[in-house]
Amino acid sequence: MTIECIALDWRILKIEDNGKLTVRILIADHDPSTIETLRETLEGEGYVIDIATDGRTGDHMAADGAYDAVVVARNLPGVSGLDICRRLREAASDVPVVMLTAHDDVGDFVAGLDAGADDYVVKPFHVDAFLARLRAVVRRAGTQRSARYRAGVIEVDVRRRCALVDGEELALSAREYQLLEYLVRNAGIVLERERIEEQVWGAPFDEPSNVVGVSIYRLRRKLGDAGTAIETVRGLGYRIAA
Image (tube, rainbow, N blue to C red; front, side, top):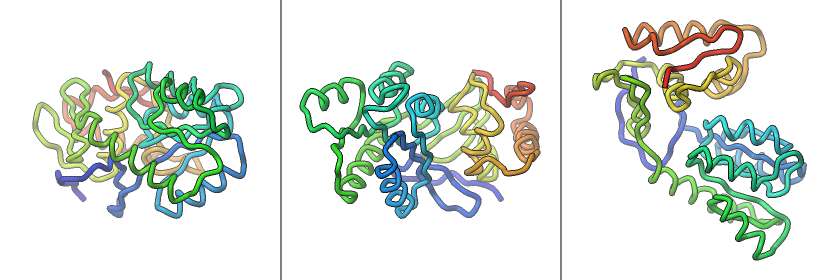
């Protein structure tokens, strides 16, 4: 199976082997009721959801950079939602952030936007209104973020779903493109095998598997000489040279 360059709209998405397009959302909140409401609502709309119930976990997951949007509670144990948002912006991340709060206060609203949030939603909220606002920030981010990412001579065109080496387009399967895009988007960062499984295959494998290793091997072969840019970091995972 090969992947062609096709025109897409605002969606900065993952392509599964069955051709389905999905948007991945991180929810960082410590309120079980809010988590369950958002999980049920967003999964019902076809979103892929990851959950963090404390600030430190949410901070780590958000920094990974693989999400199409982050929904974060302002007050989280460990690391606040404001700090998570600030760190994303300090790292030049353009992932859209929707901040949740239980306090309808102008000062809180201003603080959230000043920290870099794209929208600010007060609990309790109507799920239809929340969905509309989430779609709006993701759509807006899709028109603003870079369509191309580069690591040396390797380039991925996110909007056209194409990968190129020295300007020459590669024939990749959907999964191979997904894997390469994830590596190039995070160039210079060591990506753990389990994290690659989660982001590219949708979830960590239950049993030990060599699927990631085999996929990396095939990707290196298709990249030719440029394949040496993909490094194996023993005991940790893989990294593509920045």
